[in-house]
Length: 622
Image (cartoon, rainbow, N blue to C red; front, side, top):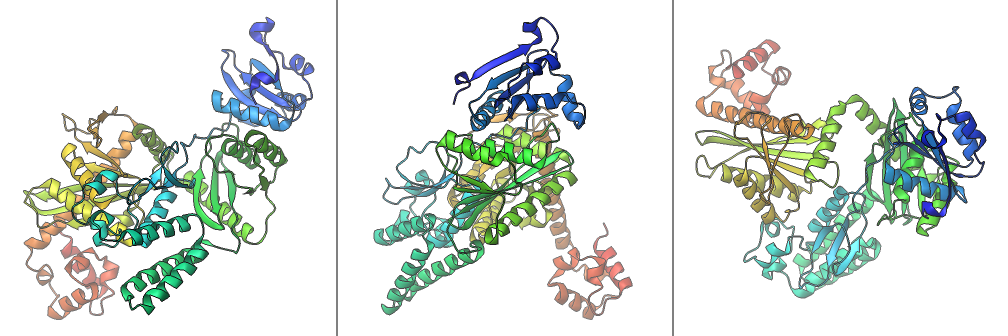
């Protein structure tokens, strides 16, 4: 429904020849449903609202009692109000959404527009079809599964499918130029169709089973796998039977983790929490009775709106936005509202789909809603407790690098050595809360030419991401490399070899002055990007790069010092052969003894508290 199809009227200071008089304006208002647009003296939009009764709703802004400070600030700036009458409240809601989306009024609850939702794509026009992440128009020949709530959910699914079925996920350019099996084949994550390591019939079977899983047909797939395992066993093909057994085990584990109750329903569970002028909305995406994924949103609210207002605005943005949004038949919310029925009618009007929005749930639906409510409260508390600059920097980084979503996990690598000796690579990890120090890792680099930083970087990346793939751990949303074009080329080659070339890589090269604030961002395509020294995204990148540098230098010094000392423990007074042996046995080696705290050292049977302090002091003295 276009605004032009509706009846409009307005009064403004410029047209009426006098200043805006709210009392006189309210006398002319109708009691019909519609939309009102508020403007300032310069003609700039301030706020767009929807009303079941325009006269009652607009007049409420000019009653001093009960208004918040922020609402009063809005009212003081109003110089004109434009009214659009709608045939129904549902049509007014659709118009309100369209106006907010196009005009972006500063006092409305604003949400960032997501790009097109991601899908899993299974190609069909190739000899050996490929699984991949897909965004945008569906022009390629093949099957599209989704949409998924975010890229992270797609990658988790692709990771599981890679481990379970082995259908290739590498780029076509990599696949066509293979002459030997890649590392993914060696660690059991790909069946190797590029080098004929699997027959055409077996690969086609794996593709069919992959599609069955993505279609939510896990039960029939399990029955089929059980029959195949029994057939292979009866034919004494125990290796093939073991493959089917492992697939059955993996599918059983997924079912145990995801399906909370019987039933295969599609629904969205939406919970909102509001506190101290901030809002958090957490969504669970339930598909085929399983939690497919979740997503957290932080709407910007300028009027201290209630939980119901924020939730209604979010649902309008989500379900009236068009695009390829998968609107389920049921939406569960944690805040009942009279506007929910209006929103149901508006969704039906806009998309032609019937949807039930309810806050009254029981059994497994109540469990899902409780999960979403708890996540919303915890995420909001974390936001309030953490420095606001962290999220602002992440949003700035997202915009600067053109990322599809706010990065949830960033990893950065750096190399440290002394004239090529005792080379150590560091990997530091940052998430939306800051540094995730428990996920930091160091790599002692060996078997390379001394001083070859490219080879060191390649070895560290290979070890890191081949292990993450083998363990099924989530990969980062952004990979930062301390270095320029050479390091970026090395990183790109490693990721292509591992079949994860979709990872976003950015090099952080020192500028011509080699001073902080003059760094150049280097992209894999050769493009260079220079940010202003006060740019929030650059500050975040500098923080992560400096932490990787510090962690690498610390590791290098520890490795160098341990080599220079013939036996650190032998030089400590009072630590004889027996105590040395107990220390080494208790901690598993000298490096672990070096990392131990005073309290940890004191747990060794023959080490007193005083002796522990002496040992710690001796091990950490310069």
